[in-house]
Amino acid sequence: MTMRILVTGRSGFIGQYLVRALAANGYEVTWLDRSNTASVTTVAPLELCDVLDQGRARAVLARVQPDAVVHLAARVLLTGRCGFDEAGESGGGCTS
Image 1 (cartoon, one colour):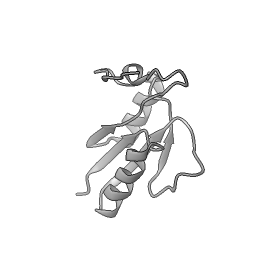
Image 2 (cartoon, one colour):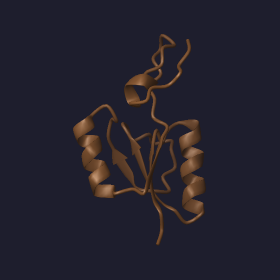
Image 3 (cartoon, one colour):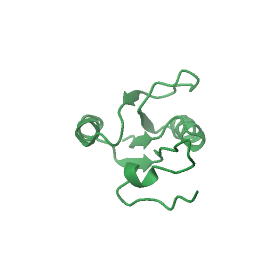
Image 4 (tube, helix red, strand yellow):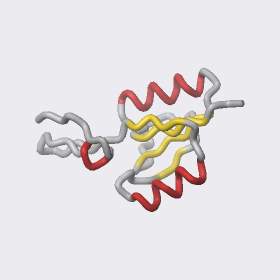
């Protein structure tokens, strides 16, 4: 049985490479991102969703039913502040 993995933050540097590597190794990968970035090569299905939209995020989780979630989503503001705390329940250690 193929392991299903949901990756948030697909347009980031790590997300792009991680999804390609997972797909190349036979995992069933779904990307979740708040925008459809044309410059990102899609090797897996895309779910458009802002992780801050809890209702939509729960609906995606229910539909995809992943075995694992790799949470890389974050919001970096132009001021240098990071919105990782808002995008992850456990928060992150953002420094400006």
